[in-house]
Amino acid sequence: MGFLLKFILTAIVTYALAYFLPGAHLDGFGDALLLVLVLAVLNAVLKPILKILGFPITVLTLGLFLLVINAAIVLLADWVLPGFKLDGFLAALLFSIVLSLVTSVIDMIVE
Image 1: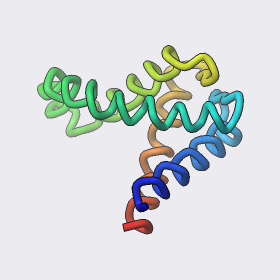
Image 2 (image 1 turned 60 degrees about the horizontal axis):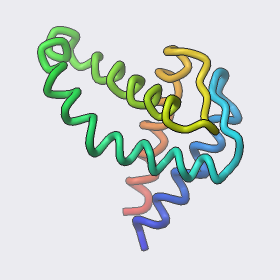
Image 3 (image 1 turned 180 degrees about the horizontal axis):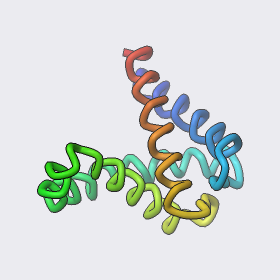
Image 4 (image 1 turned 135 degrees about the vertical axis):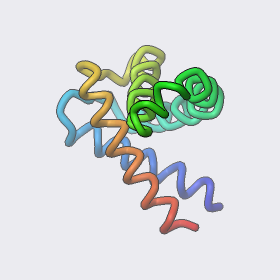
């Protein structure tokens, strides 16, 4: 039950972020649900590989390169989903930072 609640709340937050943040565009709530699924799959499959490959840069930047990895995953989701569009890297970076912060709060509340 908690997984389904987190999924729906994250989709609602994603839809709201696309509405309020400049440079992010979603066609509808169905696309927000698909975006949450695509981001979950990309985070589960691709993110560990990117973390391992980028470990030296992450150490040199004191962890700030992880923000670039998150933005790259959001840009990849933009490329995969036709109903989700970002205007550039900075929009992806802002979207990924705010989405990470809000989903962290959702995780603390739901659990």
